[in-house]
Amino acid sequence: MRPVVQISLDVIQIAEALDTAKMALRAGVDWLEAGTPLIIAEGMNGVRALRREFPDIPIVADLKTMDGGYLEAELMAQAGATHVVVMARAQEETIRCVVKAGRDYHLKVMGDNLACPDMVAGARYLEEMGCDFVIHHIGYDERRGIAARGQRPPSPLDQLREVVAAVRVPVQAVGGLNIEQAVRTPEYGAPLVVLGAPLTIDADSFKRAGGNVEESLRLICQKVHAYGEEKKPKT
Image 1 (tube, rainbow, N blue to C red):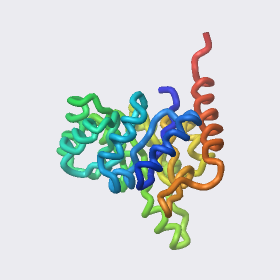
Image 2 (cartoon, rainbow, N blue to C red):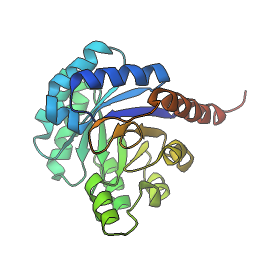
Image 3 (cartoon, one colour):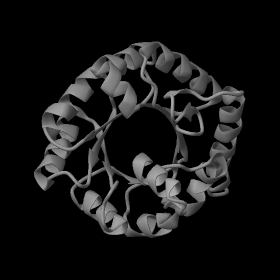
Image 4 (tube, helix red, strand yellow):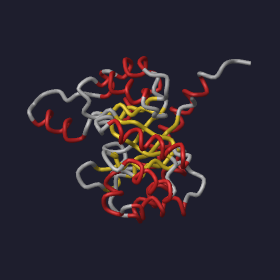
């Protein structure tokens, strides 16, 4: 698939989410993500606000579903989400319920392998369960805790090629990537580039990062989209 740039709106106020989303779309971002902090703080009202403001833009609702799969996916669909996230560590039946809701409500299901003992096997399992995308994810707490102990935290890039090779569905790499690393993920075969903390959102305050974020996003989008153009077959 053509490389896609997705911004994770990991803020806790709807007004800031809308303002950040407008800036991101001006810069060339393709998809919006109602991040977990926004959903925790504002519930489905955050997703509804994004849908009202941006009626034609794909919206990922990152609730990280672990139980109540059908109901949670249904609520997110009714609020206007086009993509929902279910965790590989959830019960098998929960994943089945989210996938069924996806079919019933025309949602795309993104399966997240966060905390799987074997990340590659977790990705393969999510595809087998019917997920449309795989999120290869190294968690916020894990990264920070390991770094605080003076050790190198794991990176999604460590096993990204293996994850991509293990599945046929598109893969997204998430978790502590800097700008240069995030932009390079299509080179690993992962076409869904996610920009969030710490690239565009301050990971400690859950507010937009400082500096000229819009100009940085514009350059990122140009580079990622140019990669997609380079890969088109010549005619």
